[in-house]
Length: 130
Image: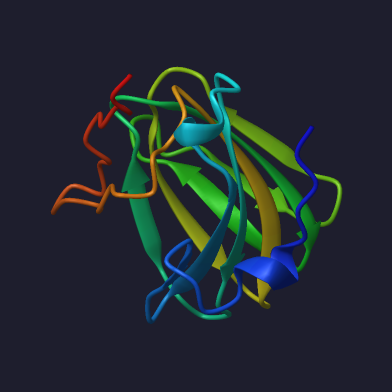
C-alpha cells in the first residue's frame, strides 16, 4: 500500500515547476501501478500547448476555470471544477486558464518523472528498467 500527500512532494525531484505550470508527481512508473497520477496547477493567463503522442491522459479539474482547444479540430470546451477531459486520441491541445486551475492528471503508460516536453509539447516514451 502506498499513502502519500501532495505536501510531501513539495520541493522534491517530483515537484516540477515551470513559468506556466507546476506538476507534483504523486504516483510514477516506479510504483508499477500501470499509470501515473499528478496534481498539476496551471497559472492564470498562460497558454499551454501539449501533445501527448505517446500517452493517454485524463485530466480532472478540481478548482479554477479556463478552456481547452482541440488543435486538430479547433473545437473549444469550457473547463470548471468537476470537468474532465480525456485525451484518448493523442490530441494536440491548448489549455488556457482564466484563473489558476488545479487539476489531477492520470497518464497511461505511466510517466517516470524524467520526461521533458519537447518543442511540440510531447513527452518522449521513457520506461522504468526492471
